[in-house]
Length: 189
Image 1 (cartoon, one colour):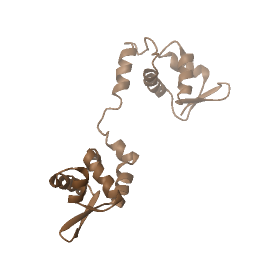
Image 2: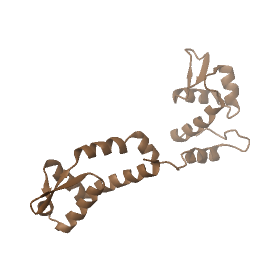
Image 3: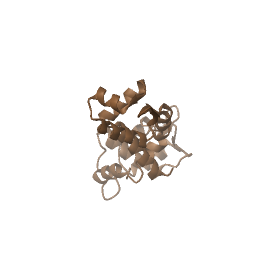
Image 4: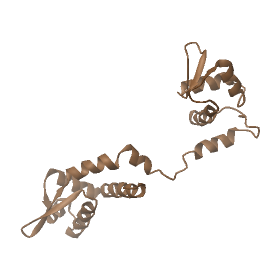
């Protein structure tokens, strides 16, 4: 299943459970198998309304029907529910739902407000989220796998702002960089 199909399946799954009456039907069918007329009487709905809901739930694979005498008896497909939850609600599928979204837009907005034309920060933000955006930008000056002395770190950070101690401290506190004991060596994580 490609990303767009996964997104569509995820949307259908949530739509199926986003209606109060469909959710009640799923709850009833989790207890026992029922016919349309039984569900309609219990929920005080018209049989045609219940049939429409059951049709949608069947479409997404949550419910199945089997004939019994003159009626169809519906049951919840627990296996399908578990499989849907496992596959559709996986981290990969949920992340794929945000494909095509510009995840760096917030950082660019923050940088636009705080960076001067010379590439240095006019000031460091006080707000935590904005400071995180600044740190994500600044950490890119460091190579992964290389160790730096505190002097080298200060020289590199000095390109961005005079308060290198705060930037250095924040990079370590936010887990973007690590340092050795007394601060002799620093490296990007």
